[in-house]
Image (cartoon, rainbow, N blue to C red; front, side):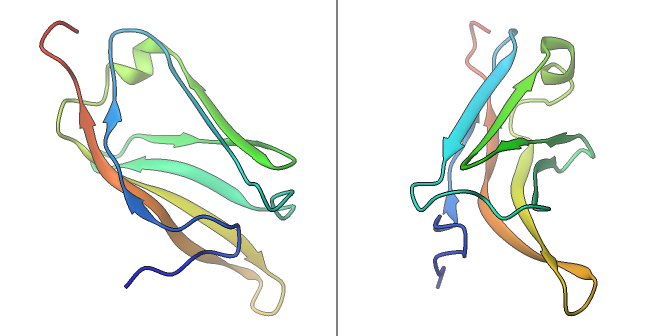
Length: 107
């Protein structure tokens, strides 16, 4: 059972459509700003990681086409949300979105 995260999103399975161009994606948290010190990244199963840029209530990615090309069709990914934990000095890590890269035959 998946439960809503503190950031207001419920983890989901969703594929990312990639093509030969740049990857541009953002998501806004309707509940307000994302906690300072939070890291959000797309971690691909082939070792490629794309850190997100957080600005207030929005996380966004703009990944150049050369980096996009390094992710083959069908590669699994998880978008991780890592909150700072002041009690332990580490992070609390939550899976936000999991899925696979999908490329169409014409791209």
